[in-house]
Image (cartoon, rainbow, N blue to C red; front, top):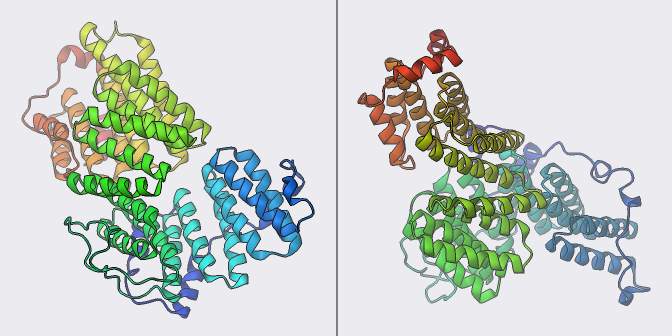
Length: 550
């Protein structure tokens, strides 16, 4: 996996000179992945595997291509119903028919569909291979628009497997290709267009964009690149991509596309604490999804608005949004959508200290994430459930003491953290790993094991130094400062507290700042009667911390 800095360096210049055929071919060579062949994707016996049920009676005696298209359509329907095994069988049979008929474009479309299936199954490496095959077939057929769609899809799959630099390349290539196909004119929306969304200042657009031959496909590529730029924390670049994609979708008359961009921009603004802008984007997206009767899109925005209302402490409004979203996701059989809402509602109920219902939501979310093979969702839910169980342990420990607290809560929390950490490691998610390590450090500190706590905090810090998450790094440094202070190491405590405040940004919570300031003011000090117990459990070597300077 490429580091973020490398991916960001490749991102520079994408808004520069218009694409040329030479620049496109040069970039294609640079971005070409080292993926396996078709035989590696399907395996030697894939075509001999179990077949789906017989073709519908209406297809009797029809040409192989017609049966292939029917199987592909049925596979897509089965995929929407989360019947992955049956969908895969239909796609494999459709591929065999298209190959026998020499229909390259038919094969390419099935590879695109099967790539989407691989992503749903949580195997992006195999999805990349399917998109490689689709890309080669589109190129052989001279289908430039199909080539652009395959590049966009492969970019998404590469981002999912952690190859952010490769994803940047694919998105850039797709966008350059659509520019070559004619989607190059400046985007200036015209006044009076009822489908246009408000801009960042709340004003509507002033002109309507010209129709473009591949406007919607171009917009999808820009929207995908905008999503990746948010992940890379290039927010100005993401905002430009979203704005251009929004105008292109508007010109294509694609209201669902517009809504998807508004939802993504709302998510970005929520991350920037721009509550007003996020609420405006979500409300506009809801209007568009309702007009198009897109229930899945509608549910996704309701979930996002519920998150916004939770941040605003409008918990009653958040619960209404979550309940409506859950109902829509359930009606459409979207397992992962249901899981995401249950996880979010569990978080909200945890804030309300409704611990029983929160655990129930987390349990249901975890089961659904496992059904959908979604490891990142599993990891986040396990971490959240571990936090809740840790909170239960802390509450009891404050009342009756650590020794008398229910050990089962502690054991359950540690089990959740261990599972979450293993998943975050597989996903190469340094920030996720750091969050779990810090939570385990908190548990060790509560138990009085300051040596173990400090070791866990320092491991978290090393991961955050790489990931660049300033708020999480600041919080971790504050905990390091507190641990040093409790152990009686005033100089180390002061150094860590100063670093915690220096690394803080606007996403850093007031509690973190208060903790660092409390250490600096000397309000957190060692308690001799506990210090002896801590030191006797895990001896602390001063030389070790001298090497871990801040």
